[in-house]
Length: 122
Length: 106
Image (cartoon, rainbow over all chains, first blue to last red; front, side, top):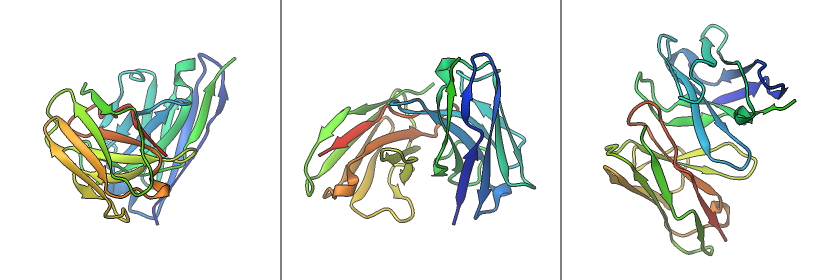
């Protein structure tokens, strides 16, 4: 079955950087776009960034544009998110998710990983 | 960006009752709307995509309808496991956005 496992979360100081990873299995990774989404404690869902199945197209939410970089390694079936200049507002559970269908256009997200918690605090 | 507004914020019902959740878009999104269910401590689970298509393994008591700017998720006869938070999400354009959620409580 499709499985997505995030890692890399933890406590990070304001202004510092961290890289999250997502290991995928159970599907042809190179056929699907992938995304990072987040959920601050007690809050709703926010799409953060997406990357096309071939890595040629990357998309970012306004709140992270210029600070976060999404990337993928199709040979290793991994998705990454480099996060820089972190602030308290970036504290959240970060989920990776798979595109619902193969497309360059936005799709739904299915499934989601269990998430990794990033806490930005001094 | 397209804003999705969900109503009500909280819906209090009993098992066996019918639930009707609403999602309104700030501009037309055709039928490019999905619904997710999230339980405490869990990742969101896809229920419905493109307004009315049930995801794999989703029971038939879940149904979706609408087009343009107004959408509805209906749960025909609530089971105890249906009490959760529900989010809508559009895929009409970048950035995709979510509604703020509707909490369905007993």
